[in-house]
Length: 419
Image 1: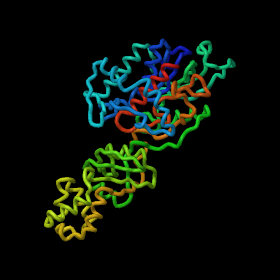
Image 2: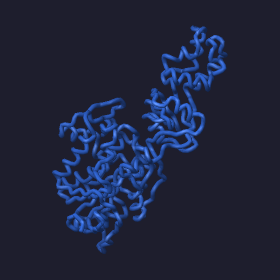
Image 3: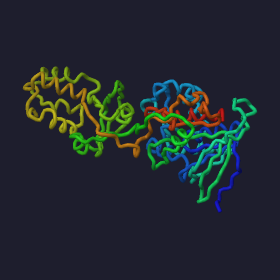
Image 4: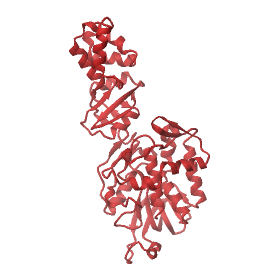
């Protein structure tokens, strides 16, 4: 016999106890709804706990639709306006959680990401939300009520969906008026990521856009691979550009390739075969600067000139590749053409990643459920009243910096108002 003891009906059943699912549950419970969350893994909020190096970058002080990637760039606006970063900050402050602002207006917990999860669980508890872990969804079905669904008050009481799931080796079947899919996406499967939400979407006739790992490190198969291995652990502030988007942040060399915030950001705009350009000297025109330095300090060697601006190990590796035959020459003996070429490469280092590290380490999944089939106001499926999709499972992906959590809070809150 299973230890699970639940009523057979809930007003709202939410699949997934991550950021979006918990926020939706809190909002619905405050409206008096009887809410159940079914979570597949052994504990709730795993991604919250792991985020931001364990400090949870829970939002950003400046949030705009331009911080999100979607085939419909306008879709996120309504939810982001309905529940803003200031609304979540107010909840954090109301619970007396200490937080700090870091660069690029990112907000992190001062102590632990557990603080954010504890807020959400406390709010769920106050609202009487039931949360069950170790629940494997087996089947979702629409009850296909004969009543014409026209969203009037009378139809709000209809039982519309049946959820079949296993728990403790037993199968359970529950019904609900509103079913919310907050199952996340494919990124970091070790933290509960899966394609379940896409399967449910496809079952109900929703389109799914192409998906790929986002906010993810690059890997290389050419001569960049040994360079990255040699420089593993070294970090430098750069501008990374690809497909008309640029970000300024730190880049980290790893034994597998390139990572760091700037690489994660630009990875959202990279497609296989694309070239990424790295500006190693963001604050100067390197070619003009080298030509001027040649006139003013003709006896200096190039590596000496670069040392105040770039880490020595990186200079050594670039020298091996770009000016090894001139390594011992003073600047005065470099041709202007050669210095101009080196300067151009310092500002436009062209790199061609072979691939990314994939979903295993990706922070998000790019793409997802096509938002054309979803109400931007309520997160409800246009053709299936009572069925909602929120959070990362949708084709809405935020930049690095707290934006994906803000989308979870905003989309979860929006659905919670209408379930």
